[in-house]
Length: 219
Ligand code: GDP
Ligand code: MG
Image (cartoon, rainbow, N blue to C red; front, top):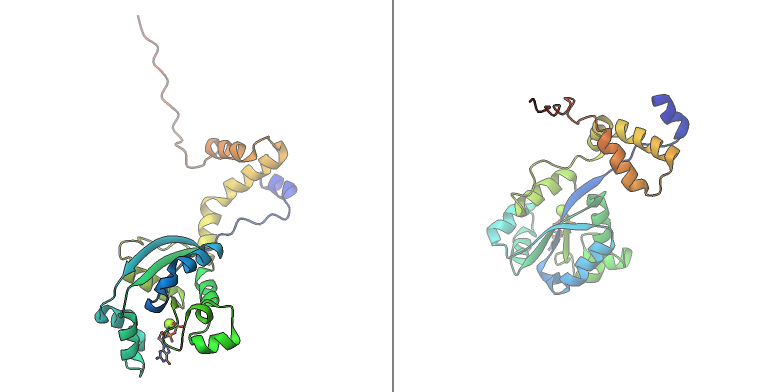
């Protein structure tokens, strides 16, 4: 079977999935543009998985930005972030963390206007503090920040990168590759339904024990 797979699909790579989640915040100064911003998020290929409108207390804002504790701008950052409601969003797509950071642009909205005029902070932000939007800066920050606002949401992180590749390689790819090979040979009218049926009947996880025989009524 492996031989046939190579023969029929010589260059085919196993599917690669990089679904990643990140936390976006529409900060108090940009709240009036929330609908417009959510629309841009969706049009940029993200799904919005979760959304909450919250008013942070100063304690919660300090907690969220704990890494900046002690910096000169910390007290005014906390006051700004607790000055009105914010909208927090868990958004997902491939490379969500870096892509969202790229879309929002540099921290300082004034500088962003000069260097990245199309980025969201250039459009919706005002200065170095009131920059309209937040985005997690790494995988570990995204995990922490998503848990901060949505404590019940994640039981296990979605596997990404290597972990996703390993998971698929172990659990799905061998069967899927065989099914795709058969599909290419058969070229059925509805390939998706055909593949779905093929996968169900060739599912290596289906119970090995045969259905019990129906007992003949004895008379
Ligand atoms: P981010 O990851 O791009 O949001 O930037 P940081 O993590 O460095 O800073 C967190 C937030 O603090 C920024 O988004 C700004 O709202 C604010 N901030 C950062 N640097 C400054 C600064 O130099 N002055 C003031 N007033 N606020 C700042
Ligand atoms: Mg940051």
